[in-house]
View (cartoon, rainbow, N blue to C red):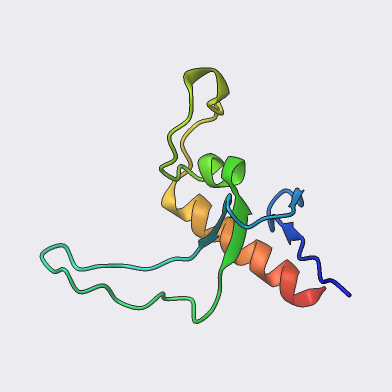
Length: 93
C-alpha cells in the first residue's frame, strides 16, 4: 500500500506531486524599527500557491527573463483581497 500526496494551487488549481515549488501566503506586519514580527493578522487564513501564482502576487522569485509574467504590480489591497476571497472559497467547499 502506498500513499500519494497531490499539491494543488489554491489560485490556479495546478497540481504537482511535490511541495518543492509551493508557498504559503499570509498577511502579517512588522514595526518599522523592530526585528520583532507580529503573528499573521488573519488567524490561520492563508493560501498555498505554486511558483507562477506567487510571482503574480509580486513575490520575490528569481526566474530567467523569458519566463517572467508581464502583469502590472498588484497593490497590497489587491493581494489581501485575493487571499481572503480564495480562503473563503476553500472554506465553502
